[in-house]
Amino acid sequence: MLNLIGLGYSIDPTLSSLHLIKNSDAVFLEAYTSPVSNKIKEEVESKIGREVKIIKREKVESDYLIKIAKENNISLLVVGDPLFATTHISLMLEAKRNNVKVNVVNNASIFNAVGKTGLSLYKFGRTVTISYWRENYRPTSPIKFIQKNKSIGLHTLALLDVSEDKGPMDAKEGINLIKKMEEKEGIKVVDKLVVLSRMGRIDEKITYGSIDELLNVDLGKPLFCFVIPGQMNRVEEEFLLSLSNHL
Image 1 (tube, rainbow, N blue to C red):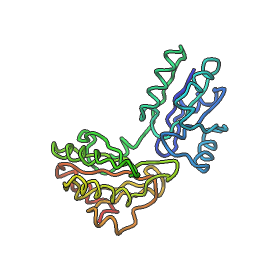
Image 2 (cartoon, rainbow, N blue to C red):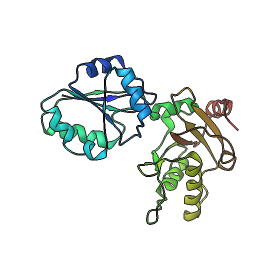
Image 3 (cartoon, one colour):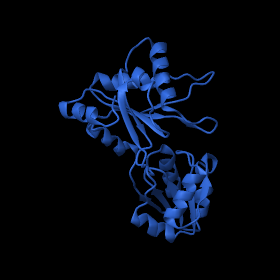
Image 4 (cartoon, helix red, strand yellow):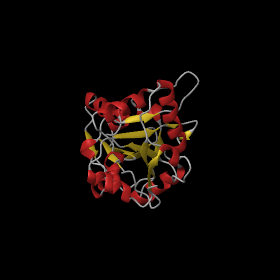
C-alpha cells in the first residue's frame, strides 16, 4: 500500500491521514516539488508523532517507493495537495502497473488559498511558473499565457521557481523577471498584481499594487506566489482593495 498524503500549505495533516501514518511501516517526506528545510521536517515530525525520511527527486521519480510499497504499507507526505504535481500522478500510475494499492488523502493547496484575495476561483485561467533565467534559458512563455488569460478576462496564478542551487525565488526577482519578459517580447501585460507570502502561516502577507510600487515595499518572506487579476467585478475589486496590506 502506498498512502499519498497531503500536508496542506500550512503543514496541517488531517485526522484520517494521521491514522494512516500511524499504521505505516515507513514514512517519507517528499522534498522535490516543494522545498523542505530541517525546520519543516521537525514541524512535520512533531505533528505526526513519527520520524520521517526526506527523499528528493531521484528517488521520487524512480521505482524506489514502489519496491518498498510492494512489501510494506508506506506513506509519502507532500506539502500542499498530493495531486498538485504531475510527478505524483506518474507515481500513482507506476504503482497501479505494479499492483500496489494507492490511497490518496487530499489537503489544501495554493490553488484554493488564492481565494483569500477575493478573486473568484471560477475565473482563473492557466497557471504559469516564473522560472529563473539562466545563460541559455530565458523563457517568456509565462507572459504570453498571462496575456492570453487577461484577453478573455481571466485571472492568473503565477508560481515562483524553486531550485536546489538558488532556493525559492524572491518576490521582487519574480517581478523583475516579468518586466524582463515584457521587454523581450515587446509587450506590456502586467500593470498590477497581488503578492502572496507564506500562505497559511501566522506571518502570511497579501500585498496588492502596481509592479513599480511593489518593488519598493516589504512583501514578506518566501514562499511567494503572484496573482495577476484579469477582469474584476465590483465585489472582487472592492475586496482586493480592502486588504490590509494593499498599497
